[in-house]
Image (cartoon, rainbow, N blue to C red; front, top):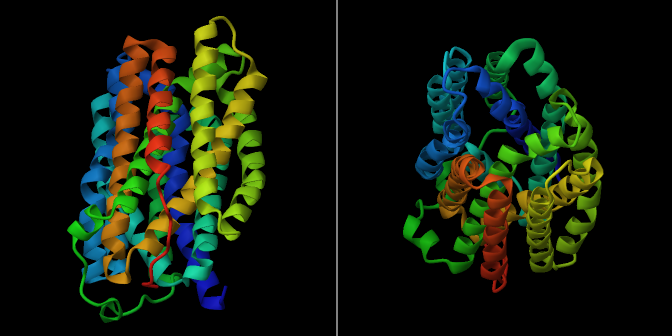
Length: 392
């Protein structure tokens, strides 16, 4: 990477990290902490509040991605982060689960992932773009690990409201990073006229990747409706869940090097299919554990989490890189907006579906559904031929 590419990659990864750390702090404790609020005895409502962030993200990712093609990436990113900060503040002041739901909805309206990823693609060459996206993915993974360690401790000390206050502060730091650390963006004229959404929808391989990110995040959110309770059943108190999450995540980041090596040798399709297969394997494994009844094995759950993170981290790095390479510069914001829209719909669907299935079918029914989704994803992705197009 050039010095400019390194600065862009590190600073934009920092924006993702600051924003996602606040979101991840909530994820492992939300289902348990929300029970302390009025309305928290309804798992379907709690799951809806947990996933509402993804629903509003889905409405705003594409418009804001297309707006970044027309008006500039940085303007859109700052505006979105301001909305996200307001949502964090609302959730911090909430008195019941409906208040949490509204705060999560406002957070989702600050949908800047497409604009940030498009800016990173603008400022890096295709030859190093997957490496830059992997840096973003690793930073998100590290924040996830840190959040898994810190969330139970912070929630025990400051409650769920305290986590949202911290998210507010981190978002303000992210705005400062955009304004004063991220390199200046290219003039809009260098990308030509903004592309059309129809061009994205007509591209079968782009839509395969979009469906894939929808399933990935549906499965991720649905899992975390059930996994915390399974860890408690295995004898691990909620304040110690980091002891299962952290080793699994750190080891998966190390293992990710082997999967990235496949991508560097031109075997991106094989690496993607293998990663999807790992996600499917974990859903089947968790379903078997849930069906077994009794006390699950803590070591077994830890091993399944490790395998899940291996597949998840690889897909988080390669899929947005693939979208940015397949779309020309004039369409990059729209293409990544569509990608992030499906990602956000997955976050919503996973929270809502996970909560409903946990209530009506229990953990076995939940993991049967996620396994079927993962199998369908593998089948639809099989014909993918990830050929990069010019447009950097």
